[in-house]
Amino acid sequence: MRKTCLDTVYELAKKNKKVLFIGSDLGPGVLDNFKKKIPDRFLMEGVAEQAIVGMAAGLAMQKFRPYVNTIATFITRRCFEQVVVDLCLHNLPVTLIGNGGGMVYAPLGPTHQAIEDISIMRTLPNMTIISPCDANEMRKLVLQTPKIKGPIYIRIARGGEKIITKKYKINIGKAIFLKKMTNYNFVTTGVTAQIALNAAKKIKDKFNIDVGVIHFSTVKPLDEVVLKKLISKSKKIITIEENITDGGFGSSILEFSSKLNSKIKKADIKNFGLPSSFSKKYGTQDELLKFYDLHDDFLCKKMYSLIK
Amino acid sequence: MSRDFYKQSKKTKLDNRSKYLRKLVLECLFGGDRGHMGSAMSLIEILRVLYDKVLKFDPQNPLNSKRDRLILSKGHGCLALYAILSDKGFFKKKKLRTSSRFNSILGGHPEFDKVPGVEASTGALGHGSPIGLGIALGGKLEKKNFHTYVIVGDGEINEGSFWEASMIASKHKLSNYHIIIDYNKIQSYGKTQEVLPLEPLQKKLEAFGYKVNQVNGHDVEKLANYFKKLNKIKKPTALICHTIKGKGFAFAEQNPFWHHKNSFTTEEKIKLIESLSN
Image 1 (cartoon, rainbow over the protein chains, first blue to last red):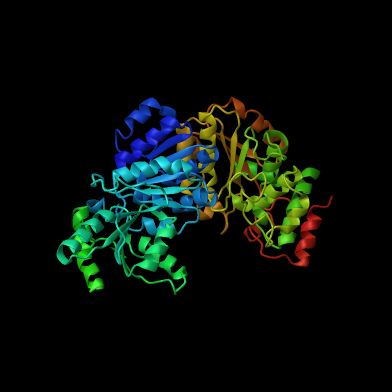
Image 2: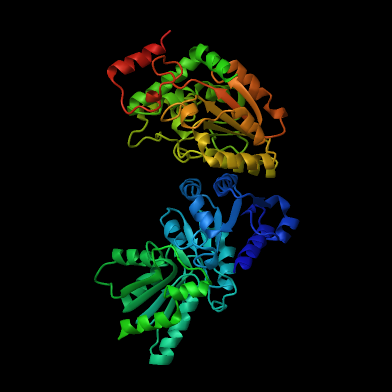
């Protein structure tokens, strides 16, 4: 997914002379072709996220479209004030690409585990947040980023995910129905769409109940049309995210629901995600997701208990 | 050397234009009944020389792509910027009296989308130099001729982001990127020498890749001479301007209690006005 994202930025740069890449001391060999073919617009700077985000703002003021890339925790936590003031306040078209959203960097510990990036970024006015579930969706969304006028945060997951979005029309700000909406639905963002599809299959196999899977690749702005339909026409919704539930994707759905007229609200909404704590464990991403109950067996059980 | 500059800047007499611009700052201070008085007064001559002699700009078309860019990174000094921008015709002088009021375009820190001539919204310290760096780099990539000037405060360069931006500017050999340090030696709490010493400042800046000069920041001739020679330098430049916080008002000079004022007594207002009379 990460490779697809960066390759797509290169694709954009080949077509548009204003597209520019800024890395913060990434691994060797990243986007070598970009560097070779368009060296002026390939910038590899040091470990200086504050200056890099400010610099990207200045470049955007000169009508460039910078794509800034480093590890998700560093691009959201270290330079948060630069993201707020330089990018969001000035509403500049700078795209931040965060590697390792969620528990991807499980063995590297809490400094590298991006557990709250969705929460903190979604509080910012003018920010768009994209969290795709596979490489196909990533590519299609990145290709659309030049249409967005303000700052964007792209959350990259582990990579190598099964392609599940091939047959869908993918647009920034639009949700997709990976499994038809029913009275009972999983609502996902990022790679949790994959977990939800597996959980939905298990419910069907075990209990012969159809459960919908509705995936939001854009956390902000939410697809309010789809959400309104979901909340007014279905009975049970489980939101799933690889982010702490405090202030995250699920919270944004509850916030939206609270604004709806109570006469049309039908669905009971439950949020599932990471707990509000720093991980005490290492291991792999899958081990941590299992430890925090973000896996198909648990979600299958939870959904069934809500339906019963 | 620092002491000599301090003595010179303390002694420098203000001419009529410098006093006039300070009167415009008083309009803001009295209009809003608040503001960073000391921080604005140390800046007047730096801004005056830049706008009178150095910068290319068009008040009728503030976003003209050929303009030189100036970012007041120490955004709390904005009353001095408002004074010179109004004097140059970016907006009407009568707006100065609305400063900090509910519907004013002139806040306690400058905002790019409200005040014509303001390049970037500043106020949170340490942001202007990275933004200016990006603008200068963008100009270089597109082979544009404009220059980018960033005015930072001495307390402001406690921020690591300033030094990060310095390293990057030096790496890219940005000869169109100019830092100006308003070195009035007082930050919010007290003396920079006590809060966080900057010395040896010239050596530090040089080590970060700048061509560094020092000047009495109230001497308009010396400032103008310095800026005339900038075109010949092939790397980022830094000018340490030795200034006096609250310059022009004896009772407020180098007095941390005049860094920011929330209100003015009638007595204080009279003293401020009298200080500028000939």
